[in-house]
Structure formats: C-alpha cells, structure tokens
Amino acid sequence: MALVGNPRVAVGERLRVIAVNVLFTAGIALMAYVLLLTWQEKRRETLEKEREVAAMRAFLAKVVAQNDDLKRQVRFLQTPEGVEKVARERLGLIRVNETSYVVINAPTLKDAPEPRSTPKPPAEPAGSPLSRWLGHFWNSGD
Image 1 (tube, rainbow, N blue to C red):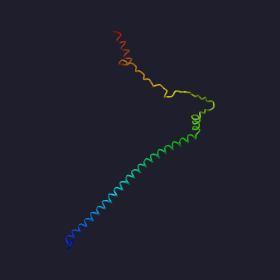
Image 2 (image 1 turned 120 degrees about the vertical axis):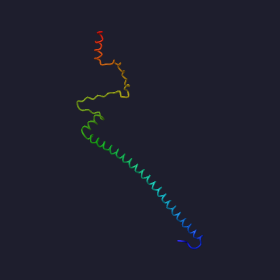
Image 3 (image 1 turned 90 degrees about the vertical axis):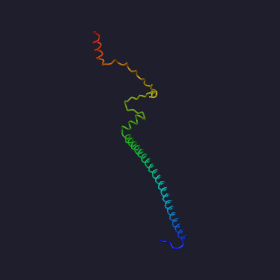
C-alpha cells in the first residue's frame, strides 16, 4: 500500500513505526533479560535449599541412629545383666563370696617401653637340615 501525499510525511511515518518497533523489541528483550536474571537467582536459591535439605537429612539419619543406639542401651540396662554390669563397672559392687582386687598405680600403655626389634638369626646354609646332616656323613668318609 503506497502512501499518497508528501514524501517527507511518509518517511517520518516510517521512522516513527520503526522507532516504535525498536522500542517494543528492546522492551521485550529487557523483560526477557530481567526474567532470566530472576530465574537464575531463584535457581541458585533452590539449589542452596536442596543442599541444606540434604545436609539436614544426613544429620537426621545420624541422630536417628544415635537414638536407636540409646534405645538399645536403655533396653539392655533394664535387664538383670545390664544392672549387674553397671553395678560392677561403675559402682564397684561384687557378689557375695567374690573377692575384689584393686590395682594401685598400674602401668598404662603410655608407660610401657617401646618394643625392641628382635635380631634376625644368622642365615642357615642352603638345603634342609637333613640333607646337611647326611652330607656331613657322606663327606666325612673321604
């Protein structure tokens, strides 16, 4: 469709349409850029939260395992064997007709001397002891 009339008006109108299109495209590009930045920030926050959740799950698993161990200990300590173990180890109690011994100033592993390396025995001549013994008699007849 050809514009009729003043050519300057037609050029101005075209420039105005181009300017509007450029501004519209730039606006769309700017909005896309802002959306991309927002998406990247939210993705980073999501990954950080996922790491925190994984760390909390690992911590929870550790605490649950400790709790299970403590429950087992409680069940054991409620048995006669558990009560006896505590009475003997922590309270130092003994049964009737048992004798208790206490070692005072007992050496600890820190006080133990360093182990000495044992010297190697001298190397034996080649062959078995029997063959050396028989060889001794064989050679003595010469």
